Length: 68
Image (cartoon, rainbow, N blue to C red; front, side, top):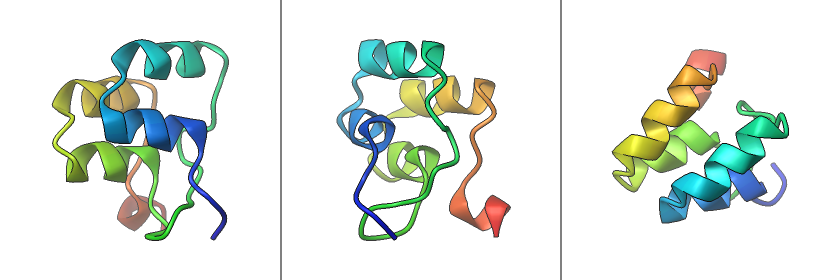
């Protein structure tokens, strides 16, 4: 797996405005990366960023287990 995406990093920090912009620009919501090979949704859930997780779900994001 490669490094973490901008969407995954924004999800980790709970940066809703950044996540919104990235989604508007069609960021890949199911891109896997980082040390855990997870998606931005996995990261938002892990770090308890519930509002970001909901934004990602509405955009069609899946967890790495749902993709596998």
